[in-house]
Amino acid sequence: MNYFLLKFTHKSEIRAIIKKLAEVKYSSIFTANNNNYIVIASVISLDMHTHLVIKPNNLSTNELQIFNWAKAQIEDSIEYLKYETNSSLVKSGRGLMHEGQAIIRTFASLTEVFAILNYTHNSFSDGGKYNTPNKARQRIIELVTSGSEIIDIGVESTGYQAIALDAATEIKLLESVLAVAYELKQDYNFKISIDTYHQQTIQWLLDQDINFINDTSGKIPTALVQQITQADKLYVMMHSLVIPASRNNLINLEVNPVTFILNYLEAKVVQFSKNNIDLAKIIFDPGIGFGNNPAQAWYIMRHIHQFKQFGLEILLGHSRKSFLNHVLDCDILTKDMASSLIALLINLKVDYFRLHDLSYLNQMYAISNKLNNC
Image (tube, rainbow, N blue to C red; front, side, top):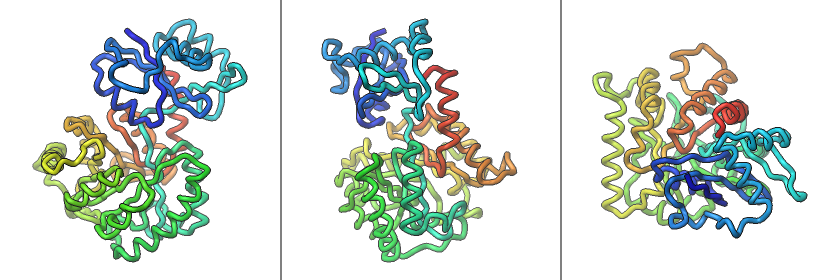
């Protein structure tokens, strides 16, 4: 195996490399001096495939320390035990001081989290809790400091029996909450996603300083998808039969729900390719709870890896949803724990999660990191 130290900005850069390698091992994510690092062990040389690789003769003393710690972790050697013993627990992992600088072996995953901010009065689990600028400000700070890379803002509920907003009202609400988000972005490192399916709103968003448009309908025109990607934004396309969700409009029980959704996805990919849309800017969400009953939702999640076959990144939006009632009789806090456990178990099969709360997931990541050594 060859070992490579990579310095990166976005986790998606590392995921894109790893999924192209047939035989690969990788370390935890390390941080030092506001930079992110990872060591990848591969039988294939990465030197010709990425600009992220740091040449061995260009390593700083801190980077050499990271390389040695990460390599020892991959090998699970006695040297790794020494690093772990000499390090101390910090908020996000195990920390070690070297030449006056902190090196942290984080417990973070390569999967990214869309943290949900419902700027609404009627969302199914937290409507009204964060629907003023001051409440939204505090919630964004809580979500970002707990590890979310992306804040997914929605101002219209799409839950069962929700009443749709007109685009003008939606834009007015978005202007209010985005003013808060833009201000916070100056001090905190996060991206912004907007949860909407209204075409007029999406047109308005093309000129806004956001990163993702999360289309819960999966039905906007191809020309508009093209505009989104040309505006250098990522398009999240969720499969749904109807918005808002309906318990009476479901995939036929005589049909395999994964095959049903795959057929939809394949048709979309073909359509996008014909229109020269960059598929690297498309993220697919199979739409848990939107057109599928609880049994079907569990089945879709068990087979979620199948949606990777078209080369798109995958988002799982399962947090606090009613499919959990199929196996649990629980309150919101227990649903957060259950949602986090699902995220942990499916972690390697998807690229993004959409969650209401990250506290349980962070604890589970820390334990999993130590037991699975990655």
